Length: 262
Length: 245
Image (cartoon, rainbow over all chains, first blue to last red):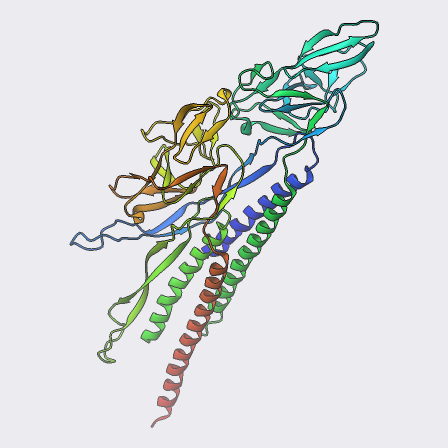
């Protein structure tokens, strides 16, 4: 019975939907997190009677065909890269990206990954690192005697060292942009890798060529909206229930058929 | 055999198909741009199994086609720059290896070369039939109500919205796409508005579908009862007639 399998695809799709929604809710307070959404597509159709096929020798045609669909599948789970709200932290090593772009992170494996989580810190050598201790690229080393660090909107890092009146520039942060940032591969820890779908990164100075600017002392909150997610959760749950109702009905019909006395 | 059994069976077969269609509607209750379907049923005067009964023609049940409800689905805000919904009749034009397809699922994105593509990676076409290519470095993308795409003050492309004189020429092919099965040419849909940052939800009405579900199950059961009664009748007739000496 096709209806049983069709309803099963519906239940599987809604289960996936709930997984995506629960991940969004779990990451509501994750810095730089972008909410995701599952989008669905209908499966193949079995055509029992083709619209437009001849219905007589007089050239009349069937006006409406008869097609039976096989259910639903997950089309894509995509990231909505809408800007998150800026949260003031007062920490001078926190940078939020306002607009497009990702900071580059050197992974222990030597690969470059990308992140929007700008809650940075220093390691024991004074290097600017992510909260996991991975180095930010291009590498920036804050001298131990620095009393004040300032990061400009265009990514210039200046420090004021003890005994000096003028701040000195010690490096520049760059932002990487992608043609299709939704195609980046998430690897957890707020990090992304370049993929075939995202295209190659373009490095530029923040604020140039349509890239975002950096805001020191802020972090970007996640763009998850609690109300939206809860509503989506309710819809998913109800849709799941309806599909299970189809399975019950199909089962009931089969059992009716089985009760026919011969 | 009695004709009543065959007539009942013909209805039960259409009911099974009806259930398949309702199941597909419910499974796609959350699919963007999905359009509800409903089976159409006709009576089929065919030669009865035994015609000695009298002049009454016997009417069987046969499914005669599928009605597709093309009414507008609810618009849902997603705030994604390349999510487009059509407010009004019409379809986006898509190029696939098998030819042009039409869809109301406006969940698009840019691919790695900057083309606007569907979820499955097939390019969206402009009114000239060309692919739409965007360079996101030129600034935020604004898509206007008429489908024109601009970055800043410069227009950089346009997505095409077309419709057909008769929507029954369209056939579903899965992946939220429709195929044109006739020689009818797509027409521009001037009255329709493209809304950016929104998606059209499916127009499946869950209450109607669940009601249909109940109706189908109950109709199937009552036909079973009817067929059992018919069999009972003939069984009793055989018993009684056997006793007559």
